[in-house]
Amino acid sequence: MNNQPLLEDLTLFCAVVRLRSFAATAREQGVSNAYVSKRIAVLEATMQVRLLHRTTRTVTLTEQGQVVHTWAQRILEDVEQMAEAVSSEKMAPSGLLRLCTSSGFGRNRLGPALSALARQYPALEIQLELIDRKVDLIAEDIHLDIRVGRVHEPHLISRRIAPNQRVLCAAPSYLERYGEPKTLAELAQHRCIAIRERNEDFGRWVLEGPKGSETVKVTGPLSASNGEIVHQWALDGHGIILRSIWDVNAALANGSLQRILPAYMQPADVWAVYPSRLSASAKVRVCVEFVEQWLSPQHDTMGSGTMVSC
Image (cartoon, rainbow, N blue to C red; front, side, top):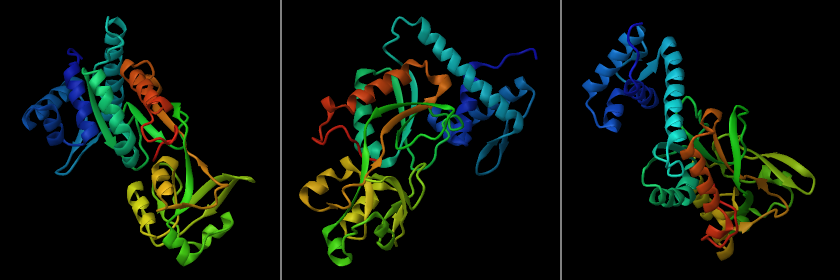
């Protein structure tokens, strides 16, 4: 191979893979569709392989494209870390930082934190994705996941940045109509509002109580993939929910929700999760430390301790 691929072409290629669209990549990068097509064609000619399958609706990687994409990400990250290593402004991170979190936590907690982060580090370009599903950080080219709940992936680095727990509660109108469960097993006979959320098992609630860890299978006529909708349905009297204490703290205080089975709770700490190869990235490190401090008691503007809503 006589020519080596240009870094800007590798960057554009990774953007196409992430967005699965030439048009979306052109919009994000502020260039024309023709320019994106031309640079990808140049990269394919340089590598002497076809990198992408193109259809009218989407773009997917070929087998050779998957290999090139993996190496392209490593190369671009190495170049970025090289720049950070020699920069005299190492504590002033810059460049693109792609994060994800669940929708409710993103709007209510992480969004304000990132607003403050952007003011402190104006050279950062922050992209926040609100995703209520399991996320593959490497395949989706995401630098950092701020996650509420358990971390299952052994190949990722995780750092606990805030304590949190989920509690059981329901509206007084629901309890008046259907009665209040007195044991955990009775939840199976109640109308529970389950949430399809990230890595949590749908309709299977695992709680810590007087007997240690116990599991109950719950059902009900309503379920959703968004925690804020579930919260509202509980306020409307449709059933029992399992939600983070910060999310329901105000409702518990004003009586619009009532905690049930108070001896039980579900641990749901907040974690910063990131690929191991990004562990030395200044922008990831600064963001994690900033969000951890933001969620600490000193920055708690809700008056509800250090627990956060999911």
